[in-house]
Length: 121
Figure 1 (cartoon, rainbow, N blue to C red):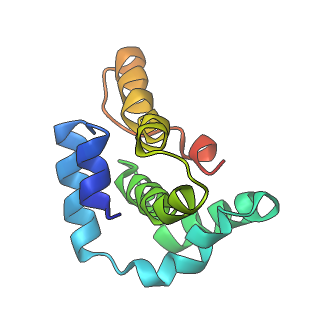
Figure 2 (cartoon, helix red, strand yellow):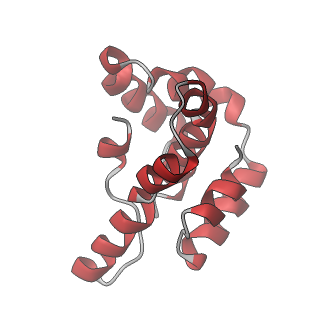
């Protein structure tokens, strides 16, 4: 699974999707690979998130952290498959991203991702 396919399948908001894809095309995810894999271990999630934020630096529009969360989610697609979890369940689970962004928009009038602390779970 790649970020582009995931964005398409979960119907990520077009304005957000274009920014995620632009960032993702220029970003070397290998520098955060350890942190993204850290999200797979409950005991390491908090530390991995703190490290990831430090590596990413300023992220006022939250596109960097969202892109990394989507990358981590795309990377675990194979884990879902190996456990026999259907695509229907995987994509329904990943639709938390556009839902969170929509909920934040309803409250603030701004499209941004504010629940990166939740998606590490």
